[in-house]
Image (tube, rainbow, N blue to C red):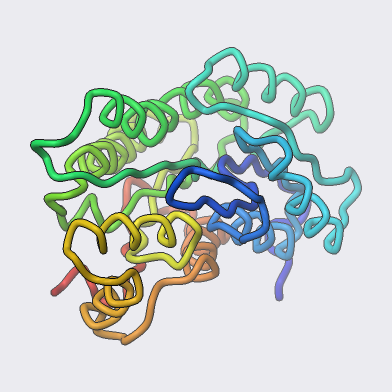
Length: 275
């Protein structure tokens, strides 16, 4: 693979391993989209700063990144994207350690599922705070570190920002917000040579999906396997999206040849958004 990001410093949120079960337990063994993005950027030559709210979940990510060791080395740090102070602390460490920041991948995200009439205020706040407010806080915080030399920001959005789901009203609202914020911030940051784009994955085979198919199955009275098969049946290309598909789309927006693309959303759903 061509190392087109050699010498670039990349911050990725939500980059830990995670096995999240229906009852919320986390064992930290399964790769997420954030892990795939981190590995892809490291393979392309970037120095990666992987962050996650769960510090323990980052250890496998860091071990994976050492296969693509750079000088200076990759780094992993705990960061809650809803806490402005934690974001600023990580950025100060990056400035001290590396002296620059070139790429930000706002990937951290959460989900829950409920019919609109049963949706709680806590569920609404949790989804909106992490998925939308987190993107805002991180983007705002990195502007001083990028405005002198430009940079690339890529937000992980969702097919839910294109195609609504009645059991995901809160999640859908948060992702519509990310899409709108991507476009607005692209306009705001263009004078500084900072591009802002987003990727909109479809049904991604991650621990988050493993939990969602249980919830959806219970609501519909079918098995989790039947729910997952319905995702495949409604995807024209006939398979689930994988974390590597998301990473490939992120990498597209980071290539030198795409420096004139900003404010765009790239749907990575195998055509499911068309159904």
